[in-house]
Structure formats: structure tokens, C-alpha cells
Length: 110
Length: 110
Image (cartoon, rainbow over all chains, first blue to last red):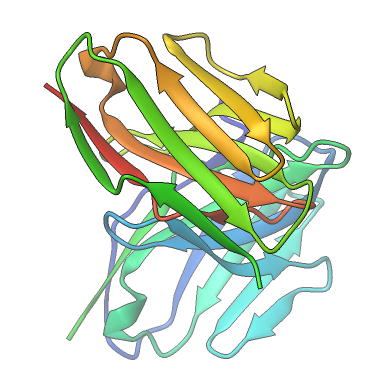
């Protein structure tokens, strides 16, 4: 059973659109959450951490819902350069072994 | 600032040949180190992690091994490669939960 699940997509959206991804985690002990971005044939890069109170970085907003055990990523005003795979990550306290989801593919078209 | 290096960037090896991939981290001390493999179109599979020199934990039994001869050096090896070893090998480091990835080695076993 996968511990972190994501819709693989692809999400195909036009430039300027708002798109949201959800990710569910099964380990209720998970305490730290992140979103990574992975471009084709490149390494994953940390996009943002997800705090209990939610956090925003420019066009990107991340939210955590502990009761329902999911995190979300909202991208506003999508750019062509946002096209990538977005990986959701959950980590539990005391273990520096995070669990990665398999990623959600986003394609932004003109 | 911290940087992570991996080499080689690409590698083509015949079945049955040995393998040695190297990863080094600069700008931090006593990092946690990780080896992942990502098969084409698949998620990240954690292979090994290390919390200190000489301390290696294996997540998936296979014909690969890892060593950490120095604090900031992590090596992935195999005595005899299989076709199924093809993939994108990523080294990562962390101090807490956020992981930072190297550029990866794309291995093709023929």
C-alpha cells in the first residue's frame, strides 16, 4: 500500500489558468511535508515546505489538512515554465526518510 | 552554501559489468546521505541511506551495495549489473527532513 498517493495526471492547462493538486498520506504520524518539482530528465528540486498554517510563495500556495491527511498545491497564473512533475513528500518525526509520491504531471500550453 | 556532485552524468554498461557511482557533498558536515533510483516514468525508489561514516541501511535487497568511506562521500556499487539496473540514479543529502538532490546519473545497461 502506497503511503503517499498522487493523481499522476497529466493536468493539461492553458497559460494563465489556476491549477490545484492534492496528495494524500496514510501515515498519521507524518509531521513534515514538502512539494518538489522535477523537470524532465532532471533531479527533483525543493519547491516549498508545507506548514500547518499553510504557506504562499508568489504564485504557489501550499495547504495541509491533517484531519483528512492531505496536502495541496495551488498554482495561479500558470506559466509555460511551470510544466513539470510535482512530487509530494511526507516525513514522520524521528525518521529522516521521507516518503515521496510518484508525482503529478503538469503541462501548461499556450 | 551547500552543493552536491554526482558523476558520471551518463553511463552505458554491458550486463555483468561492475558499477561505481560517486556522490560528494560540500558545505555541510555529517549529512544524511541517500541513493535513489528512478526507472523511466516511475517514482523514486530509496535504495540506501546513511546517517554517518560506515553506517549504511538498505531499503531494497538487490545486487547493489553502498559505502560511505568519508563524511561527505557516498558510493553506489555493483559487482555485476543486470538489465533491470537501468535507471536514473540520484544521490541526496539532508540535515533534517528537506532533501537536496544531485544532478543524477543516467545508467543504461545493455
